[in-house]
Image 1 (cartoon, rainbow, N blue to C red):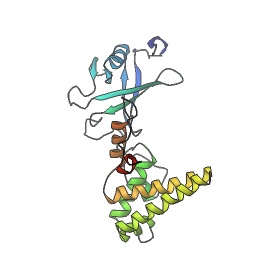
Image 2 (image 1 turned 135 degrees about the horizontal axis):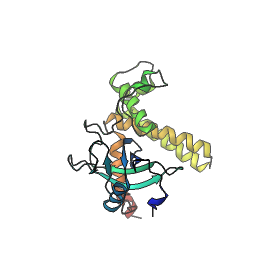
Image 3 (image 1 turned 90 degrees about the vertical axis):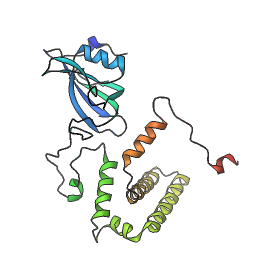
Image 4 (image 1 turned 180 degrees about the vertical axis):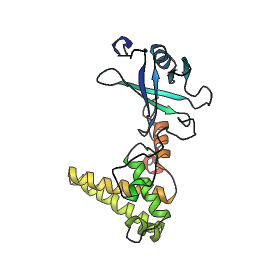
Length: 229
């Protein structure tokens, strides 16, 4: 249990709190908590903050209905910043964007593929999916992904079969490097299948959260083949 007395609040009795999507790692917003807001957050399991402008306690989502349900709370090494992992009930930003960090200000990458989106997605999976979408919607004759889309669904699915077989061989060979490389290839082509059907990775994150969330791991529903054994 968190001992609030071990935290370092500033001269105004506040501590910055970074909200992060528990499902995909997206940084949603930054706000401030005082001791009362932190206690209320842990009591209700919904994010509460202290408004510096209004000088009052407020619950995120109380007006919009877009509550931020707290899953985990971390303290940094200096005990002066909080990381709050949440399951959002809706957009975190008042503009309607999922995250307050939706404006790309600078990028070390000049390649258009890396700047296809201005949204601060959770990780490489989301960014890679964006690139795949751009290759689908704006084909590049030199692009492998574009060539797969132009080849149609059967060609894409054939690659899934091939890559799954390579994963199996890597596992049978007990070759760690091979397993990593081939699983990466399989995941890449699975993302292309998702792109073909216009299913963003966030829908998979939500499905995983629904299945393996608060109540723990749910046993997958057996297939006909499983039950016949």
